Image (cartoon, rainbow, N blue to C red; front, side):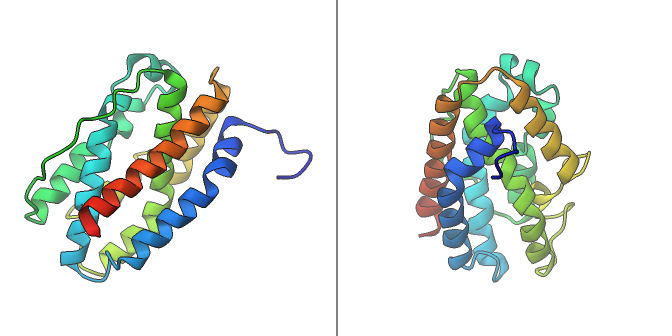
Length: 188
């Protein structure tokens, strides 16, 4: 970060979670979950756990005042459709998050919304297996406004909000740990 770049919530989140993000990406790619459809089913199952866990965040009324299109960003139904497309039995799920604090919710949401940027690369890998945004890889598709526009709108909304940065940072780190726990539960 240059001296003239303004320190925002999202730049703080990116810096704070960089190592966690890199380790998680490497772990997922090292598992070879995009080598074939059977392994990819594990990836989709991981996504099912993640997106079920965060459903309450996308339904948070107070947070929707900060991020007006919050409900539309939720990918859980798309993951469910991908599970059906691929004939994946629905696993037993853990309880969804009980986070109510807006700052903590934003930290966790940063992890999930940020994954949409990398999903473009993963979608290309899924397409190599004959999957698409309309079959088996719906949850990897872009939001209606496109990946870049969607991310910028999210980033601008949370950067402008009155968020406790320390709580958001802790929650984002916890979010990466939670995703890692789902990866280990399903694919290890």
